[in-house]
Length: 251
Length: 248
Ligand SMILES: Nc1ncnc2c1ncn2[C@@H]1O[C@H](COP(=O)(O)OP(=O)(O)O)[C@@H](O)[C@H]1O
Ligand SMILES: [Mg+2]
Image (cartoon, rainbow over all chains, first blue to last red; front, side, top):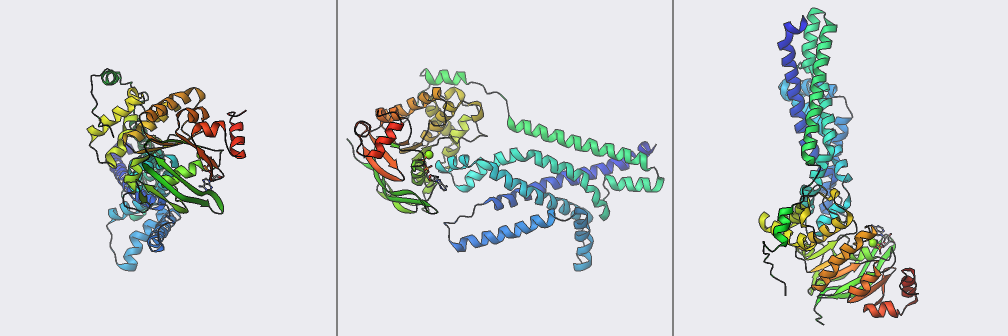
């Protein structure tokens, strides 16, 4: 049986696939947040031109990055970065380094747009409520907007993770021994395409189901309890005079 | 009456494109003044309040706080905003934070209070608006009236010297309007300086020290409530009050 004989190869392939996709999704999210946050900085038309131009240029560069990596296939990017860099500039990149870079940068490009959209989707009212209390733009972003953005885009992060688990299979062009690479090697020597493909599909499905389940748990955890507890003890203590408030009255 | 000027607004103008929304608005807000800003929808009440808090940049004119001019680009804008609190029509609570954290966030980040001190202060003001039992609730778990009372406690917790209200009861179901007006009434009794845009004419008549009638971005009439409500000088004021069923 293919499975019992090659179990350890499939498992190593699966592990590699998981490691690349999890780590790269994580790094991709960090990139995506960084780029998305910059993209969402409003153009302050009351500021001087000199202050506005660097931001505009920076935004344009980031925009270029997003379009370039969203708009080209990852398999071509892999070949370009791994082989192309070597031939054109003599940069010898380690295969694994290349794999992490490619998938992270790709995820980052997708996440950037998701994050930007997520930031813009939080209603302006909360932002104004925050400013009215004296919070700065950065405090407002950090404590009011981004936590909600993060919560709202978890499904998108999950989407990216699942896509990455599947799409790392293209990395076999740079000889990464991911799950698909193992499949190609095993079936290439034994001609047991059907069996091997069945095994590989089952493993991919297990991994993606696991990923969805994990993200759902994260969502639940962030959402907290559905109900709130009336803090009755507090109330009694505070309204019965058990607790004294020392507030200096303002003359 | 004590006539210390807290906020002085001088010739404030605001245009959106070519649309003049505020025209030469001039008035003083005295300490413990409760000024109600009335006027039809679109007359510029919100814009005026938003300019006072720099959520909107006035096109021209000046704002003085305790005699000192304030501008959007000054370093202590945050300090000014903390001293001039604002309560919004749509509450603008932070959806992801519970009632307690809604109140403590700015105390901790803007006024740099420690957590315990911030929570103690929050408790004091939440108790005042009778929302203390709800400290663990998230905004979406509260009724409109409850949300607005939390929003008021949040603003009060910054211990502001002036409170601006932008139609605080307009988004509420009728049976919840009173609970919010009661809170505002007690603030007025305690001497809080307030500027209130409102359509609650009864409240304006009972509680305010002065009423300002804003018409197409201009202060058309200003005076004690008895005067504005009983014998308005301008035809436009009369029409407006008719529409509000105050004059028959
Ligand atoms: N951001 C904006 N851009 C353009 N016009 C605006 C903006 N905000 C308010 N206005 C206009 O300014 C006028 C006054 O609005 P507002 O201050 O909200 O009035 P009120 O609060 O008295 O109903 C309205 O005609 C409104 O359409
Ligand atoms: Mg308004």
